[in-house]
Length: 457
Image (cartoon, rainbow, N blue to C red; front, top):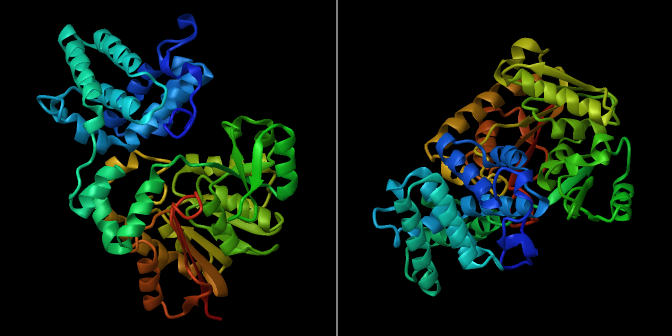
């Protein structure tokens, strides 16, 4: 997410305008943002995928693309707080508005309350123009009236004191109340508030050096010489944090296979597996392949890594990654990982990684729409799948071998609770290291859980 327009940062002079030649595009930054927000709500589509498609369609210049990106992610992140305040100004209530009108009010409110140096009058004018373009005069008049009322009462729009703790945290940091209640029970108030606060901060860009082609220090030097801000990760041995580099997948270095784009917490998974040259390794739920490639690099591309995914198009992505990085030790297999004991030899692997399907509640800062699309009732179903996977894939590990179980969530039932139950049911396994639970506020990285287990010889 671009943060140039936040109150804590600086904004380019273009932040308050649509700018540029209209012949070169099909709409403004705010119109593009509105398009994404409406479709995200109506189609339950991922905002990051829709945003990418929409920015290409609208052909915005760099500054307007950054503004549209900020508006989309910021509006989604702060949605229930925005709705809480807007309810006071919409006579019929937000729920009865047409989806595009609701999204237009939300993105306008977000700009007025959370962005710096975007003049309120410019926000209102653009919103009214969009309302006229998409609806009738009555709607544009309503939009104008609501937003001008917001401006008049702006200083009084604060979350009241004395709210119950779950409601206060949910409104202050814009999270669903059910999610906050769960975390209050599991983590306590202080940690819950820190998690929610961190989830609203933009993710930083981190890349993993392909040590088969370039050392980490050498990669940092290369980026610095090219004028980028880069420094070694303090968390991940192969990681590099990059600032101001834009989309690193569009660089020639990425195409040459010098690095992969991966969160620092995620890089720790292959470090935990710690595969050795010549070993046979299984990655059960491998797509899109970042951890698979990291393991292959750590093995010096000597040995075998079997990367399994249930979807063939995702297995294809894994193969393409291996080709880009120049890794020959990766094999792909398309199957439901619960069926792997029917397809692979029992006790045939030295190390197994089960990066399990999970609720994903550790990566909310990357996928803010997840907060509003996820339902608490879904979490139990996910745990059933995780138990089924563990109960099957462990058979493929040789005695003395290592099984690493990981998730990108902070949910106890999916993490330590899942491992405890597995160890209770399978006394032939024992912990090989202290489990690692990373929270989003700790290292400016994703929330992750990693448990390393050994099968007794």
